[in-house]
Image (cartoon, rainbow, N blue to C red; front, side, top):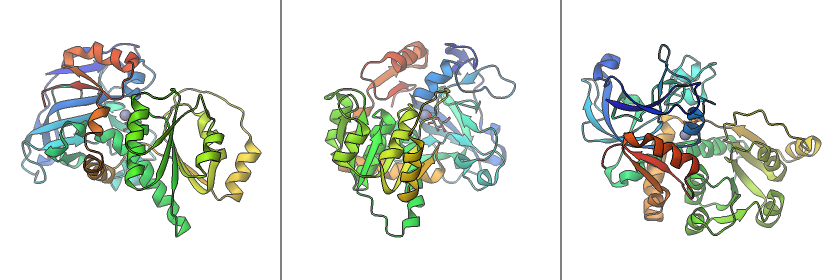
Length: 367
Ligand code: BGC
Ligand code: ZN
């Protein structure tokens, strides 16, 4: 079958290649599921992998099949699979268990192992191919009525996890009643995080660089989120006018913002850090002020990566709820379809240069 791969360590090596078609027998104990890939979204992680700044091939291989945001249809299931049947639409989770205690209870997103296994990212092939096979426990069924927006499930789960963790952490307060949230970054992740917070009834301010109006700012306004450009206001001004923020989600990829967010976070507030920043940037920070604010304000900051099966399931519910609350909104995030695996070069070009792109994705097979 055809697959789109990179040679990790070699910049700009994205290419189409012929690889063996996976079979149900690749998964032990009859728990395999063969999936026809329909759509695969790409994001900054794929860009970094193609730039040779991130990612590793499976042991023994010199190439890595890309793709971790998938939507597919089940073609065949092994004899021990009861929960899925041919024709079902499915999304695969990304991380696979290693050996830590957390991995053993299905929380590989919380692994303490030195290396982590992620399909399409680290040590395991991804989904940007005609087919993939995986064990049933790593696949989540999506209802047909969700349709092609199911390809947004994986990025949704990254936001779901951060929000679930924030709520979990805030149980320390017994009566946490968050009212105002700030979302830093208005790409796919920021848009989906803003959506989830709106579905939970919060007032949301989203901050991005670009001057409004533009597609993302209009989409945010459609769901009742206030968009502010950081060219016009600082985070401190935004907080003075629209805060204090009970919850801040940082997902811009610009790590210095984390420390600004720490400064403006409200008393008893919680800050989620979501940017996987590969560089080694340094900044000067008002350490005493931030520290004192955290101590006297009982604040919390935490990091969050990836997502567990529970978040994929909650993601399906929230995407369905979003289609009811804001019909057609999710579909508008699917701005840049690129047809066919052969168009891998266009896929990467659109991802890196696509003006006004929200979600760039490959239509591997017709929906
Ligand atoms: C993926 C996550 C993954 C993270 C770190 C993100 O792009 O969506 O599933 O855990 O990269 O590799
Ligand atoms: Zn991703």
